Amino acid sequence: MNYLSAENISRNIGERWIFKSLFFGLQKGEKVALIGKNGTGKTTLMETLMGMQTPDDGKISIRKGIRVGYLPQNPVFSEKEEVLNYLFSDDLPSAVAIKAYEKAMLSGDPKELEESFALMELHNAWDYEARAKQIITRLGIPDGDQKVSTLSGGQKKRLSLAKLLIESPDIMILDEPTNHLDIETIEWLEGILSGPNVTVLVVSHDRYFLDKICNKMFELALGALYTYEGNYAYFLEKKAEREASEASSISKAKNLYRKELEWMRKQPRARGTKAQYRIDAFTEIDEMAHKKLDDSKLELNIQMSRLGNKIIEINGLKKAWGDKKIINEFTYTFKKKDRIGIVGKNGAGKTTFLQLLTGLEKPDAGTIDPGETLVIGYYTQIPFDFKPEQRVIDTITEIAEVIPYGKNESLSPSQFLSKFLFPTAQQYTPVEKLSGGEKKRLQLMRVLVQNPNFLILDEPTNDLDLDTLQLLEDFLSEFQGCLLLVSHDRYFMDNLVDQLILVEGEGEVKFFNGNYTDYRISLENQAENNSGANKPSPVKAPSTENSKTKVSKLSFKEQKEFETLEIEIQELEQKKQSLIEQLNAGHEDFQILSQWATQIEEIKNAQEEKEARWLELSEK
Image (cartoon, rainbow, N blue to C red; front, top):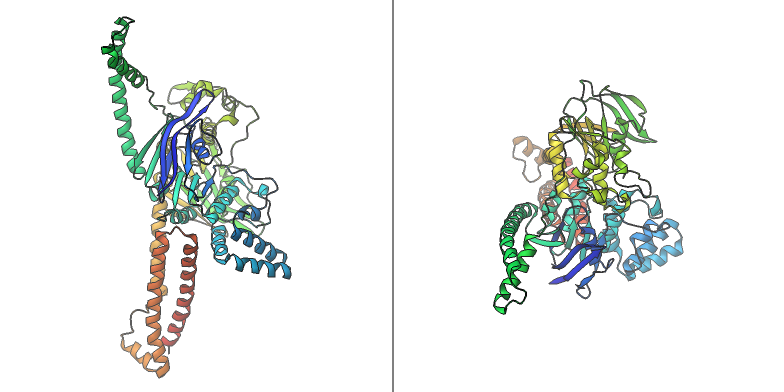
């Protein structure tokens, strides 16, 4: 079933076509990735589909009754908007009922509570509320009476995502949905979006996420849209084939164009009709011969400052915010070529740890002793501040007039910007005119221009296009200094780090030897081992002489109960595993997902009670 159709749509800004004559559609259950370099028009295309921008040509059709939801890259909110009012808009009766119920719970007024209970019953909103609470809890949404204006950029993005998931539209158009989510939450989101009837159009730099979710790729390049049926790995293969074929066709067209141009120039003005086919063919050859190829490549060949033997020595580090412990007694001496990832849930203290290392925060106790040759390049989640109307080139010249590059080369700021895919014309435009991804690329430049020997990168992959991300990954893999990386991008983390710092909350900071996938495998193995150790093996009837003796000491009623418990525990385990498999497979209805999650918790509680009774009887 076709949900959305774009027919011959074009969008022009100034003298430049962002895209031209695009035809595509979204079918029910399709999960499509929209891929393209920063600045190619991905956000413009999504806003055009949402009706936020009007196409200059063509039309967009959405099937009657189909609801479309949009997660923007940088959500905008009213200054006075409260979290609760935003989450539960007045568009849906269930949302109105929940909003009234939540306000009544906060006020405690008996009359309000009675009226809100009646409203919840009227609109059957209890299941809707259970699903909403599950989403709100998972995404770490703050209190309902809090002003949205007081939230951080990451909290605002998660709030916008929560609203979208709660409303559960038929089509979800998502611009970088994994930004500001921790890895566990991304895996949870993958489970929701993988449902067979969930329809998604998504822009994301997260390659594991794209491979897990998407079954089709749209590539936006030089105003055209190319379609690939398959996952991200298939897209890379077919894209390379397409570009090679296109380059070959253009090369042949150029050779033929020269011959045909000579023929055209020799022909008299009053041509006969028998040569008209050749004239028409010349127009096509001319167009192909002058077709542009997207061959712009980011160049990273930054010179690293010399790094001495002493890098950073940390001894007995402690930090807390009030009663909340962030780091308690952490000691480590950084070594040359350390490649360390930092893993932890949102709010656990990862960014605070980085700020302690860079001197932006002071420890409560302990010491951080840097070496004399240390040059830290710190890329933060927070966008850099630029002055109104400040030009792109000014953001580099204020740091350096001459930039060492490669072994024996130095560049001017303009040459350096060109290496980072900022053409001369763009260098003299205001920073505020750049796309989100282009601003991030400029921010990365400002870090690298200092020639650091110790790179600290806090979510560097956010908003970067996949081509830039691949080149950054290649550069970091060859980087000879120390690398400390916080990233929710599991693919990026797996390829670049060989050990992890685990920020587990309550001051616990531990080391793990291996990358993120190694860590996840370790956790799964540990969970299986603990499960086996903690369970009394209820599925196996006691067979030793000692066991028989114990059972024989039970009363007839207790012995019957003991035998029944073994069967009941086994049945509960089977039910739980079946529900877990269903939950992992996903479902288009969030209400059903919520019911499954609740049933799993109920089964776990019942299991614990029965296993405790089984142990009690087995000891008699």
